[in-house]
Length: 506
Image (cartoon, one colour):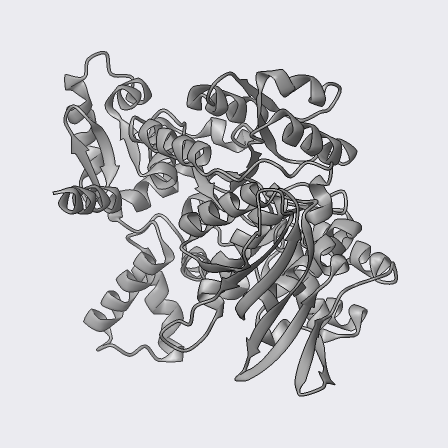
């Protein structure tokens, strides 16, 4: 989540024939009280409409508009805007009637009203006729004219509701996130990143090669190791321009590869620099030890950096998860790779995955070794948060006494165990237990796009598979869903994806 350039606070200084870039870094505690105020303000505003929240409040409190917008962007990892749905606003009986009429979204209601005005008022409604026209239009609907006006505006920007999607952050963690994203913004506009390392050269080279393959990066080893015992290495990562001449689109991959390299070999980076291109001008960004610490090098510093980064384990887990999702065995959970880094106890950590179900988001860590698990336990133990850790069975003792959900494994992580742990520790919100079976069906389709036939039969209460098609016949009419006998129910989007994959395989 790099900042927009309009929110990127920085300074530049001339050094010889070039200019050096200094992204703004919060170095002391002077903003902690202001950030704590901002967190408290957001806590009090949860559930309130955007129109009720004055954006100038925070801008005036911090004094600097760019700094304020950057800090608010960091807070958006926990507090985000969400539009209410028609189902959440009206009662169940009213919604069922609107569903029969195909009027379950603000867009559908507006389109229906526009058609009514076109037929009865020649496409133009005078202000003095508005009230009578809305009452006439609503005479055939289970809602009043006042409700209609409110429902039609649910997707308006000012009607979005502030929603909390994670635990309350600490002010120090917001500072850590701000400093990281400030540097990330500059690095994402880099044409090259040069890094000098000192450590197990051949393990580092293997990590660089694997990361280049994983993220589609170009690199070169500027100083080739002289012998098997050499410990110094210089690597240059190359950015890539997009069709519009910018560097930031490919820069996201560049930063992700750099973070993975630093996490795999935390005790090896010595120094470096980046060539940054901003608004047609070139700058040099110095990557000294202070900057490298902000990027997360200190997070796992245990003197361990002799194991290369391998992508096979993560790729295999992602593949197994996709297969389980196709069978409807993940209970709506989706697994995303390369999520945004987290601030934990003043450290930057890079989760391996993000488990997502509706508005629920759970960072997932999968340390590949006992040493990595011990390092992770030390960090999240100081500030246990909202996450799931998948660890080798022999590393479980490192988390003893910590309130962190664990999924031990021997050999390879098991998808069923991970899904069970997610459901136990991160259950659906209580409100969802009151949904009807049809509402649960819609929710599962929206979250996963596919429901396996066996799961569909249990959900609908059918004793035989043959009864599923008959049960769905009335409900599926007019919806963007498809029942595939022997497979299950899927959305049009999921079906098109399967067709495209089959065509590519052929």
